[in-house]
Image 1: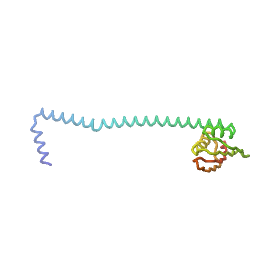
Image 2: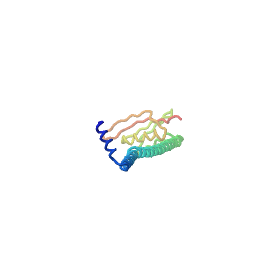
Image 3: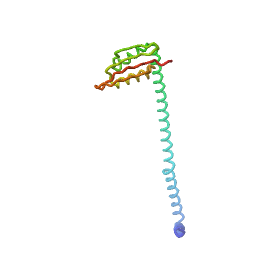
Amino acid sequence: MSARRIDMTSWWRGRTGREQGLLAGLALVLGVLVLWYGIIAPALDWRDTSRARYEASAERYLHVTSELARIEGSAETRAVQTYDRPLRTVAGERAAAHGLAISRVLPDGDGQLNLWIEAAPAGSLTDWLSDLDRNHAVRVERLTLDRRADRLVNAQIVLRREVR
């Protein structure tokens, strides 16, 4: 390697002062270009991209938290609004909204409500119970399902209102 270094040194000395200046200027320009396009520009681009992604994430976070607060607030409002109404009325209205027909109702003395539903699609029944739970503070105390041959179910359900 020292022979190669000697060859480069002798080659450099063989250039005129003007050629040496031009070659040094060319090396400086190449060094600046490599520094700019190889290191600085990618770092600046990475910083700008990171900042944009952070701002977009922060905006999505604020949107999600505000929507969550709105949804929780509206569910609470609905639960409070239906809490003033009798459990039998709320259960009956929501069952009708889900296409279910309650065949028999028997109120208990301790605030519970016994319901019988015959020939109901299982999906509609679970959607109705979920709606009561999420939006109306009504809990299922006991549930008995009998599967029928025609893919429908008969249900005996005991509901109670959540204590507030």
